[in-house]
Image (cartoon, rainbow, N blue to C red; front, side, top):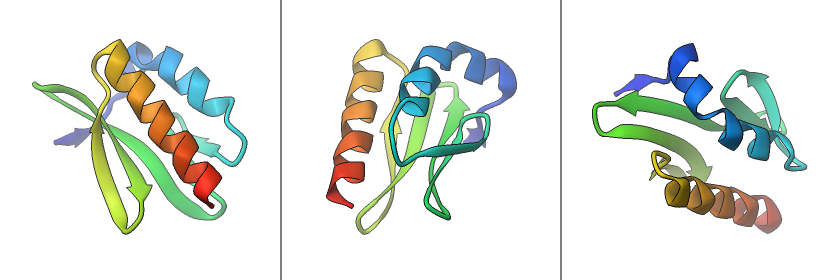
Length: 85
């Protein structure tokens, strides 16, 4: 599964805007978010759709990000992780 291209990220732009609005995340490159100094979230694409790799305890978790419901769930997981510290 390859990292999301710029064209793919165009399709995720509404999700990226929602993530940019969250306190505690810094977008170092388009679609690549850090929490403090550690990589926290980035996106992949393949024939099955879009996926976000999120650093949740104890490690990386791949979450679907193709549908609107997927994207809402991904934002909920990110917010919960940010609240948990």
